[in-house]
Picture 1 (cartoon, rainbow over the protein chains, first blue to last red):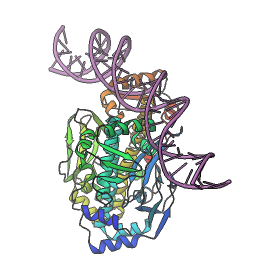
Picture 2 (tube, each protein chain N blue to C red):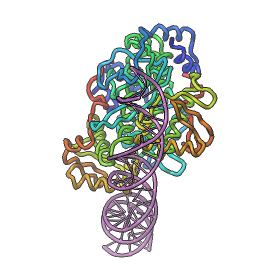
Picture 3 (tube, protein in one colour):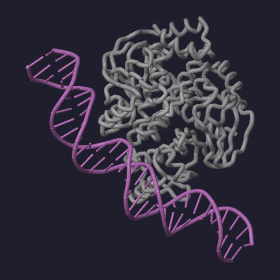
Picture 4 (cartoon, protein in one colour):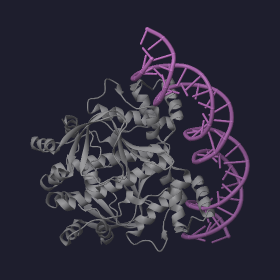
Length: 239
Length: 239
DNA sequence: CGTGCTCTTGACAGTAGTCAAGATGAGTGG
DNA sequence: CCACTCATCTTGACTACTGTCAAGAGCACG
């Protein structure tokens, strides 16, 4: 069931057959979750981690007036809250953007991994550090990039992240988000996202319609975003 | 030499005497670094981690036009680039904001820790996950908070982070940053930071002059920031 | 007592937000 | 099969927060 996760792992690291079996044995349960549902509430005590098998999840934080900031999107193969293993409760919530399929991994099994499999532990540690790298890129976007550049950056990031788990077709991919969802990722209003998408379409860069992203000019898109993919650590990292 | 780091560790976790000795033995060298110097360049291969003993460091990313976004500030006791142990090279640079004293910890010694001390490994893993939590709070600030609220948030965060390593006096602390440095943390221009600081001063919330923060109304400051300190994980977390 | 850096302020500009109304489109029930 | 509904998308007009540019003040340091 966790093939996409293993696919991502193998793309970056050397994973032994034994380690793969250990990881498979970590899953205690597979579950379907509907659309638009909060599956992890901020500050609740957690005893399992969540591996996304199908669908899309968002980590988000809310302000009192209802404003929401998504801090990271999760695609199939992602451990959405592996960091809960050490943090025990999260500073943010996690919700589904579409109906999704998730695998649950009890903390106690991860603890056993850390006791017995140091190399595998380092791989998991790497994975949470990669999430942090994505957070930093988003900080750069939110703090310094224009609406146009920021939106382009997100489309580029998702293109690569979906690509390594085999979820792109040519230069297009399904992205089951509304413009409001996008605005919560980008720190913009939905109205402005709409205007920005129009601008990108008219510039011949990318089209986003019917929950699908079609990149017309990847090179141009990356240039607008000043996209520099190294923060995704797509090359091999020996651990 | 790493007392502030141990102080932070003990505040959150149970650390055995043996573990503390192991950590002390991880330090290979202590070094002084001048003001305003990049000590880690983005994308360079790293073989050591950097523990900040005295001074202040910033993690930052630059855009081509010279705009800079600081993604996290580091105070004494912080492992500034523990994540380089698994990432091997960083997606960002790290520089000194003041002259600083740092301790170097070779990756190979950390690797040995992961092979032999699983509990200690989890503590270090926790520490990188805490950095990620700070990144997320900054994403919220950069994406959704106003200039005023964002600035208040930063002063609150630093107040607590400096407090647990004993670097506050009452409700004030040294903050050796220029307004330009602040603007690079806050995703604002230096001019606007100046106006925002004036507004906070006139509102009787906080004063920042001569590289020192004096909080006049902590409760009010937290209210403006909607500061909710749980993301700093200041309570105990058993691992 | 210059020389720079930082801070401060004012006038003006521009990107993104707000408000509002209409269009589009998928799903539902009569 | 055709309204009907509700969410989403789109656009226009106006607002406002933050950025830009520029000039002068304050201050540490040599």
